[in-house]
Structure formats: structure tokens, C-alpha cells
Length: 434
Image 1 (cartoon, rainbow, N blue to C red):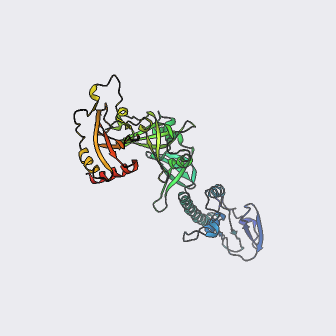
Image 2 (cartoon, rainbow, N blue to C red):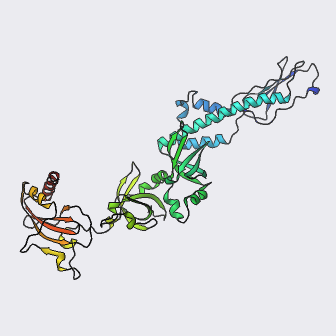
């Protein structure tokens, strides 16, 4: 590519009519060095333009049809190598490969304006070719980052109504606001997303390429995915974190986890069923945006970068082993809170009759009866729940608990089966009972 500096003006009056031709060659390494060769009877002034070193490199790296050169790209595929190459290449002006300027006696000499026009046309074509080759190489680099999952340190060029604009070498990609790390909003909770974006302009942030489609011109980044790569190694199932409520949906709430450095880096979901042991009709009745709570990690999907959290599992499970623990006995509870079957029968909860009948058909089950019942102060679920107590059996009697609404019934199961046998029997029964 020729520089924009104008070629030296031919000085016609300084040459005698029988002057020799002067041939100038520009070195590809040193722009300032000139090797002068004298030749006779050469054509009139005719500049010719060669290829630049940058374009030669890209042509060597990628074939004309767009396929890669395996022998050249093997040392070029790592993100570190890509960064080093583009830092060098972007700061270097393409050197002139060959330029010839010829003057001959007795021939018509082109004016400087005409010569400059021809040079400018060739220079423009060469510049466009270099620019296109580089953009093609940058798209290939983006696909390498996408396929390898490597983290890219990108500069925030600006923002619009939907997200940030991230510089990726000669390309500009997009980072949607939902793909921002919770670090920013938790650090400055008073700021709007637009104010946060304005403050990030010019900053370098860690991102991952989550979409690189050259044909559709889509280059999408995620800061959340980069944060997952950095911090997901520090979490395990059963860990307890302080968390801040980010958003509340009909099906649950998204909470940001606070790490030992005092910042919020990852986000997890608390499903509506894990908010409280009480029956929750609307999550917004329990949680609001900005609330700070303690949560327990109950599931991690590392392939999908998802964390499942629970609030209620940090509290004592009300579904305990005996009716005495489900309904504590104290002076504040009336006599009707807990009753026995002394002298009268207790009507089974809806659906228990069918379960009892099927249980008695199982081998090893001798007797099933309700021993007592009680009423809780709160409703956990309107559906019938049945579970086996971990309390040791007494005289081959195991304890079952059944609950529906506020009503809880204690069931004595006389059997020769062990706990595992009873669990299998209950499973068979529940498969048969609609």
C-alpha cells in the first residue's frame, strides 16, 4: 500500500534532452533507502504497486477460498498468539514492496496529478484487500475463542439501549445487558443500567464469545460466562452463601451470591418450592428485589452454568419423624391440637383408605392403623403427603406420617419388612393408586 505522501515532482527543466533514465526502487524493509539504477530508453513515468507484507502474511495464513493453511495456523490458534499478532499488526503500516518511477528523454511525461491518480487507485484497492483480509482473519479468531471457550479481555467502545459494544480487534461485537456480571449492579445498586454502561465505556472487561456468525454478522459476548469460568470452581453442593435478590419471577427468584472478596459474581435460582416450608402462592409475598438472605446450594449444572438454591433448607424441616415434633406440645396449644384414637376411630385423610388397602396386599405387611392426629398452625401443602419415619421400629411397628392441609395423622405399620422393604412396598402401592 502506498502512503498518502505525494510522489516527488519530476523536474523537467533540470534534465538535458539527452539525459539518462533514472530508475528508483523502494526497499520493502526500509522506506527511506533508495537504490538507484541507470537504464536507457525506458517507458514514460509508470508507477507500479506490489503487495504489502501484512497482506502477504494473511494470504499465506488463509487460502484464497477462505480455508486455513494448516502449516501456518498451527502456531496461531491460541488466543495468546492471536493477541500478540494483532497488537503487532495493527500498529504497523504496510510497507511498500516495489515501486518504480521512470523518466525518459523525448517522451511525454505525465503530470504529477495524473500519476498520483493512478497511484491512489492502486493504493485504494490494496487497502481494501488488506482490510477485508484482516476482517476475515478476525472472524476466524472469534470462532477460535467461541470453540475453545477462552476468555477475551475486550474494551467497551460504547453502549446502546440493549447492551454494550465490545471491541474485538477490527470488529465490534455486542454484549446484551442480561449477560453482564451481577458484580456491577450489586456494587452500585442506586445506578440504572444505562448509568452503569456509561461508567464502563473505555474499560477493559473479561468476556466470552457465545456467538460468532460471520455470515449474519453476529458477534455476541457474555461477561456472565467469563465469571462462571473464574468462580464456579469455588462452589460446591451444600455450600451456604449470603445472597442478594436480583429479580423475582412467578416461578422463583434469581439471587446473586456474595463471595469472600465481598463482591457478587454468580447468580442462582431459588424455585418457588424452595422459598419456604409454608405454602407460597406468590414469591413476591416473601422476597423483594434487593433483599439479603442466606441460601444453600442444592444443585450445580456445570455444563449449563446453572445453580439451584434453597432458602427453606436452612431451616429445620417441619416434616419430622414423629407427630410430637411436627406439632410441639406446650401450654399454648389447645387440647384439640393432638388427639389419640382411645375409644373412637379417626377418619383417614382423603386417599389414605385406598393406600391402606393396597398396603395390606403387600407381602410382609400385617396391619395398618391410624394411632393419632393433630392440626398444624400453618399449611405446607393441600396435597396428601406420606413419608416413613426414621425412628427405630418397636415390636415390628414402623411409623408413617400423612399430611394434607393443616391435618397430620400418625400411622402404625406392623410388618416383618425392614425400612428398605417398606419403601419399596410403598412405591409399589403409590404406582397402583391413582
